[in-house]
Length: 260
Image (tube, rainbow, N blue to C red; front, side, top):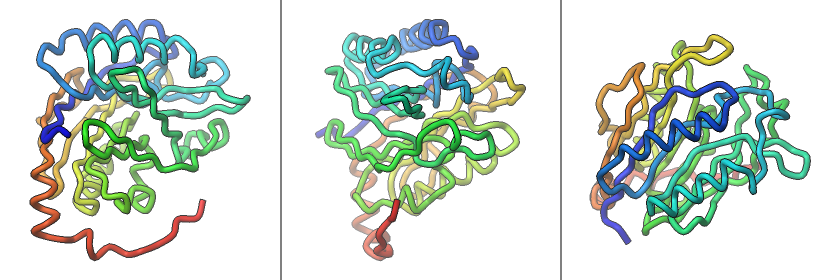
């Protein structure tokens, strides 16, 4: 078990529907990380940008991007996480892939399709909440629009980290900032949000604001608006344990059953 977990958030522009170029760009950025890290976080749909053209962009679980993530994780001896469009059994998924240094893959399918863009009509809804065990840490991965739904994120599993990968646009970035902080506070966990920057083919602008918040809602990252950057943050198990033991807020949470 690691007392500390060092996380690198790669905040990047994305090339529209060009998985090859995006993989090249991300490899180049990852190669600039010289200090040892435990986890590298990439945005939502990091090979294509967020779009509904599933039949042209979706890959299989044996496709080039999955293999790329496994090879890179093994080469760098680091876990890598991000989401891509996946086709499986004739259905499309916005699927988060958490690839461990040994190549093992843990997956999470986005629960809340972004209905404003018609995502719920194209991609199949995920039904399983996932908790990832990594280096003694319990990580709950979610994707973008999931951030607006606190019941789905409620910390009933005693997880340590809530992690969001996103393509969150500029007009609603104040909500992104507020909700990341709120999810950290109410769940007494670290909350990580990785967003993209740049303009997509539909004219939507993304301002970044990737961030890490601690269990008290303190922001641990610098202002990184509107630029490509790599934020490296170290989080500590002792911070979680000390505050949960002292404050005990999770002991007073409501019991409920979530019906899919």
